[in-house]
Length: 315
Image (cartoon, rainbow, N blue to C red):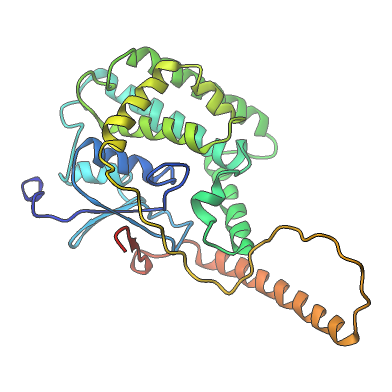
């Protein structure tokens, strides 16, 4: 399939941009950067239909589709299917598997913890829920936090212990990667790899999307050569290839009210019987609405691949 790349039209479907990142999703960003490092021409489209779907990102060309939740993710699928493989001559090197374990296992685990637990989800609204009504976004946030804790093996009894272990592993990974990298351009001297895509994505997301109080951010910034590495690659492969800013995204309309800022207090006015009845009905409606959302999320979960639709960047 590599021989047909000139005539193929490739599309990466991801979550929308934020924090000055082309896509703010920590799962989508590595796939985007991987394609940029491979210098494979592709179109970027955005999906807002199912914010908690584990199928995003996905890569498509004609009838071919590579989903995030299949075969180890989009990058691994593209390598396996011969679409683009930056690691073909690197996988036999002795350092490859050990570096992959540090980046794809320890650092990914640490980032998941930091996003959903360590920073209490401060960044998640912009990444996943900004187009959704407040009620639905809160339900999905608690659902995703619960799932993240399950994946990380966090319980009420071992929370403190797991936190120490996760941060300790992250520190050790940063130290090892900093030593391995030195002042090289890439992890493997003069050629980019999928590991560069994952590491660059990790660093950019932490610096640009997480709050300054983030423990993981502080640990990363102790290694200045990792920051310089990310700045150089970002300038060469991401900023240089972006000749124009992304167009504004279309959000899906909703009949649910969003949470608004608290209004200024007003003098108390005695309500009529009709107004009191209306208020009671409104409370009942909101409660029923919230319960319906909870039941829907519990039963339906993420959307199926047939239901996903995306909004093209050129729209």
